[in-house]
Amino acid sequence: MGTTHKLTLKKVAERLKVSTATISNAFNRPDQLSSDLRERILSECEAIGYFGPNAAARSLRTGRTGIVGIVLYDRLSYSVSDPVASQFLKGMAEVLDAQEYNMLLLSSNPTGQDAQIRMQAFMVDGFIVYGYNPKQQANAPWLSPNKNVVAVDSKSISDCPSVNVDNYEGAKKIALHALQYRPQRVAILGLSLLDTNHVCRIQADELYDEAASISVQRLHGYFDALLEHDYKIGPEDIWNIPVNTHRAAYQAAREALMMINRPQLLLCMSDRIAIAAVQVALQLGLRVPEDLKVVGFDGIPEAANIHPSITTIHQQNEEKGKIAAELFLGLRQDKDVVLTTELMVRESCP
Image 1: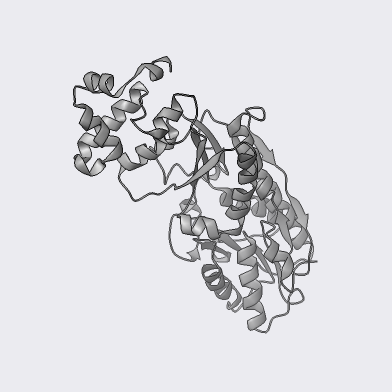
Image 2: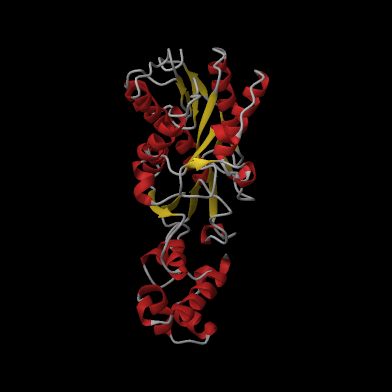
């Protein structure tokens, strides 16, 4: 915006009909203003292209801050410990390091004031949004049309390029491989299929929208593979695991394997879930893969290093991060990218 370079603190104060101290406090000392006034000031400044009387603002006058906001789909503590998210961040960091760019990690579900979020938005050139869900994150500040945005693991943000994995084909591929053994009963240990914090079985009308949930895309891949092999599966054989942790996965796997008519195949939507399922099976005296076959999804290193090793779908997590960073920096053509997956056959389902 051409007016950005001409705006000064004094001119903005005159335009908004407040003092220069009020403008300065809105950016630098938010505790000095009421929440409503601070929000109005920041919103009006954003509308006219003024980014504050600070170092970040001065760098914006040169056209860039050298910072990209990485909006993570869950709490920061969870995201940085999740192996898939960690691989994604590693790939992205390699590209950003080479271009002398920095990352600002942000949670997509912040608990702070909206005005504080807006202040963070002023500090970055744009956002790479990882795992956006419109049902959970409506009216997010990173959806501003004035910001460069790249979506990852989501197609729900309009007018911006996206990077996604072909989750449907990957899930169908691994299910078809496992179903060749003709198990009598199959169970699905799903991940974040429902809007709930509890491990539970699903109801079809409760599922997240397919476009917003990679897990539902994987579920449809499983369903179509089962249909090709003439299997019928109902809600009683599908578990929802709210977060990709060992504890939650262990609970779901134990419930599935303690059924009187227990399954002979577990289709797991993550390698963490598959690893927990194998642990439960061995503790119950089941042999893997003789009594129970288990498959995962993701291709994390831990899946190859345990015994029995996990048959899984390898998704290109680091490559996904690299491509997202390249799209953001303009190093590749501005269009959607869909990454293929690879079936990794190992001991848990040879």
